[in-house]
Amino acid sequence: MEEKVAIEYLTAPKGKKPSEIGEAVDVLYQKDPSYKAIAHELKVSSNFLNSRHRIFQLPKGIRWKVDQEQIGITQANEIARLKNEDAQWLLAFAIIEEKLSIEECNAVVNIVLKQNCSIRDALSSPPASVRFDKIQPLLLPIGFDSRLAICRAAWNQCKDWADLCYQLLRQGIDVDIKKVATQLEALATDLREAGQEETK
Image (cartoon, rainbow, N blue to C red):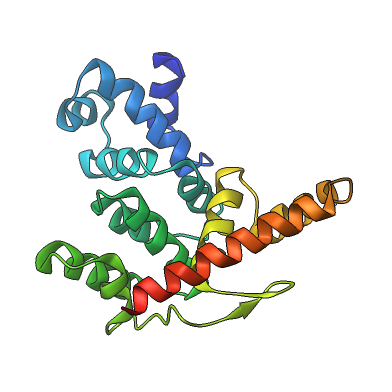
């Protein structure tokens, strides 16, 4: 994005996606790394600039869900408070799949940051109380970690998980079934071993 376009996006943000506004902030921030200075020059809020820039720094798939309005701006900024990308993905997934509220997101992130707690532990305790052992069927019943991995891959391609699964199934019609079965068997073994290690 050119500087002129970035200025246009920030002075007339109506109709623009949060990630587009964030990219515009990033362009100007590279030139002058001060939200206050940019805000003063463009007569916009420095908090607005900071918020959208933080969203722009999230992983692509999470930004897509923000642009789709499935993750709210306030929730996205809570995700951005987490520095670990895997933690960001897990919280984003929980927001959509478990319908976490803004208050629950804030509480979870505060637990992680103030108590030096893992994101899984924070999400599994109140107020969120996410159950990671819950099975939800796609075509086959799969666990939480597998659903998270599928969503992560799909969102990074700006697709819903069902669309990605359908695409992969369509591609799979011409594949070597024996090879796929061997790969699935190896994956199942890995998942079983990971599950056994988690229970230790």
